[in-house]
Amino acid sequence: MSLEKAAQAIRNAESLALACHVGPDGDALGSMLGLGLAARNSGKPVVASFGSPHVLPPSLSFLPTDLIVPPQEFPAEPDVMVVLDAGSADRIGDLAPAAKSAATVVVLDHHVTNEGFGDVSVVEPTAAATGELVFRLLGILDWEISPEIAQCLHTALVTDTGRFQYSNTTPETLRIAAELVARGADPAVIGRHVYEEAPFGYLKAAAVAMERASLDPRLEVVSTFITAQDLDDLGITWGDTENLIDLLRMAEEADTAILAKAHSDGTTKVSMRSRGLTDVGALAAKQGGGGHRLAAGFTTSEQPETVIATLVSSLGDHR
Ligand code: 5GP
Ligand code: MN
Image 1 (tube, rainbow, N blue to C red):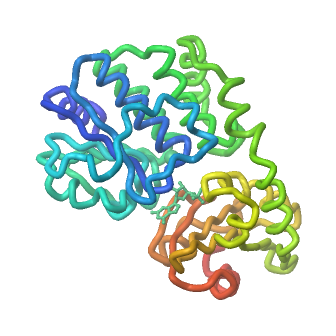
Image 2 (tube, rainbow, N blue to C red; image 1 turned 120 degrees about the vertical axis):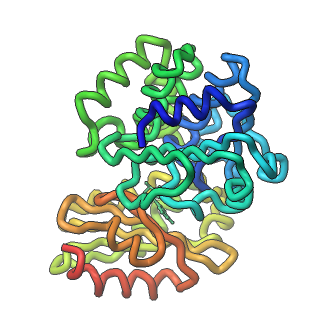
């Protein structure tokens, strides 16, 4: 569906309730907050949230997050609920019942595995980030992009393009980025918080994960895992490990990188990346998750080493 339809629903809303995917990244938070702040500045009552565990990644806490309420305070029956950067209905975790009860659900997303949910579903896999869609939406709504909003949307673009270096980076992405910087986004602040600093414990965690990494040169896959216990020992949180997959995927012998994160509740969250040989989105979708062709993930109840073995043995089906 078109962004105009989404704009119409948002314009006619008495109030807005915004949600993004669980374990939010820079695009999820940046696109949600960008839209939320613009709505607030335009006099539209708005709240924003994301599902449990409701913990902001430390590297993104520089964003203006005061719109965000805990999931318990999210309206049970929203008027218009806007779901951002979530490839499927279950990706909003414990906010899913609110979406079921909402009068209207608007979905803004760019995941190729998104099969379409909600009443107004705008899914554009060619958009590098959901933040691009929000930028265009604000143009249609004629809602002003303040420096604060520009910072949120630029964070969305920077993080989902890996600092404008992934293949999803288009001339349009860069045009929007230029516009956002012109409107007050500060690339240096974003760069420092997201990429240039981390707790010392993160360096140690990276060392633990890399020590455990294994490379299969024949299958061109590199994999490793990290556990909640490792993080506890080093005094860091899952939010601190966002960039770990980027370190692992550097192995030049590998097309595919697999990182399994064993959480304390017994679930394992798997992140996958490919240089182009493997459709990790399809591989993740088969496991109940999703994402993009070259970056995807899913959650399982299997142990990290078991799930890695399963994935490695099924790689051939996705090349
Ligand atoms: P990451 O590995 O950074 O968590 O996620 C990579 C990409 O896959 C992101 O676009 C993310 O939204 C998507 N993704 C990660 N985990 C899941 C999941 O469990 N389900 C779905 N549908 N997408 C996921
Ligand atoms: Mn995204």
